[in-house]
Image 1: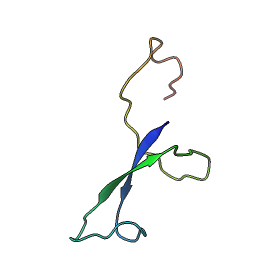
Image 2: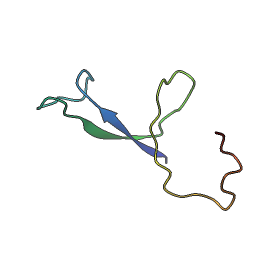
Image 3: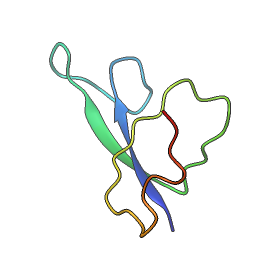
Length: 57
């Protein structure tokens, strides 16, 4: 099962901010990434043996 974390701010249905600029992390399982997303923030926590072969500048 894949897990990713969303950063929610004011205006989302499941986020009730208590302060100005307050944001909330929400874990989501089996997140689907497709062409309709405008932004995707991620952190690489583990790399394979072949580093740099698939990356583009």
